[in-house]
Length: 294
Image (cartoon, rainbow, N blue to C red; front, side, top):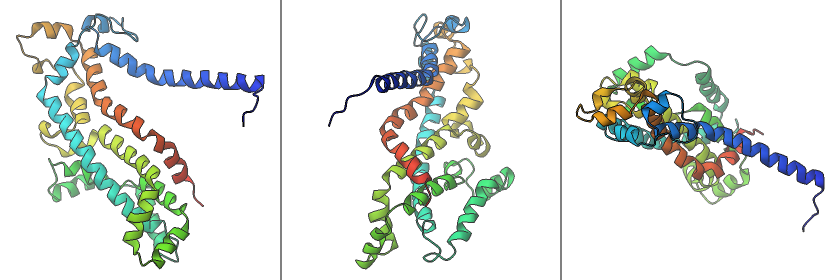
């Protein structure tokens, strides 16, 4: 049934649309600015002439980036880290959140274990004990040093267990009547129904692994094992002409510190920019439902 909108209602919708469009544009402008700098010449970028459109268009910065085997190797390490880290983290998060979502009658020590996890949010073991643990386990200079220490994100566990607690208890009761155990109930009922929360926590995990750089600097002794963000922080944050061949003088002239940084930043951010739109429809629903506690 169609309803006639009053003038005030239409005015509100127009103002709301303009406001949201302006906020969206403000969020996009830094990305557009970085992209414009990456396609501009070094002299134009250094002079501050680039705003939202490339000046003296050139792809020299991207030729420099993709011509570095070190950069591509670090990119591949980050991809492995994201895939492996997300799978392990999501598996541990699901099997941890499920028992913690039960009440004290079903899981007698539920409150104790819940507070143990909350305690880890407030207090950590410290950098040196964590490093010694990783070193003792023989994970230095391996992908496992980047994946396992932070495999269980307590925030994601809390988000998911609250989502589980909002599911109807009758679903579990009916599955128990049919003879299903806890693992069958978890994987056949809870997991399929919690896709919004799982997508949200998976997105948090992926972004966290992709943006992390400090642990790579600590646990990796050889630069060839650096993930991408650590590589950017330690090597590419300054324009390094060692990776440009001496005979390629034209490429060196077109490059500058700003254009090189801009190209590397945009390439590093591009995978997350691609993934996020596909998971956005789950994001808000997962956040809202997982943050409500009955």
